[in-house]
Amino acid sequence: MRPGWLNARAANTLQENESASLPHVSRRFRSLILAYHAVSDAWVHQLAMPTLLMERQLRSLLYRGFRPASAGDTLSGARRLLHVTFDDAYKSVAGALPILERLGLRATVFACAGYADDGRPLDVPELAEEAAAHPEHLATMTWDELRDLAERGVEIGSHTVSHPHLPELSDAELDRELRESRGRCEEELGRPCRFLAYPYGEHDARVQTAVRRAGYAAAFSLRGRTSPTNLYALPRVDLYPRDTLWRATLKTSFVRQPATAVSDLVRRSRRPT
Image (tube, rainbow, N blue to C red; front, side, top):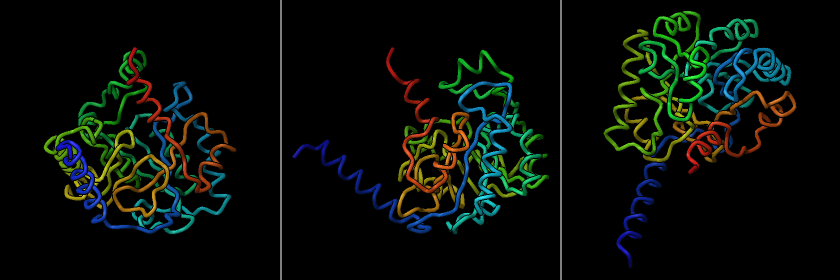
């Protein structure tokens, strides 16, 4: 028997045990949590949702009987609850707030603590070229801007410190990204930081366990639904400019979805040239 095979099997068993220890929500998670990124009519990019299209998507969901709910309310997985989230905390998201307020919708913005210090563009490797060409569109919110959102009823969650690929980090690096970002959010905003959104939607049992140990109440992914669902792998439906009203209706009909546009972007950036 090969030692490498034995080590891999032991690692898999450990991850399975860690996953089993996480609190489950339900076998049919029926709350609908949307994931957007930027909201802009000026930036033509797969992460930038046109304002009118986003409003049409949200109005359609309310017409279909979904009920506005806070992030905390959706943890039960109850049927027909609707919550809206925005990853990366782009400045353009502030312009979408009046739409949410008119529709009575609740929202969470997930911010990277390392970027909120100065509001610089999100220049992660996958977006470095775009950030250099269009820094104004990838500019992120500062702590002052995030405080303004919080005062208007928007929940502010953590998107780590530097937006890394969490499964690739060492235990120490992972712990720092999770604990430091949560601590900075609470220090700067003066309120609990209860939720995390995984950068790129990437996580595994080790990451989920680390998130729980770091003190988060729940964490959100970008992938299709898992069964059973635990509080540290909550599914969201991510929407992009290519998602017409018809396509968005299909994606929000509780059918398991394939890989997201964000994961597609990551895969393309990692292809050898």
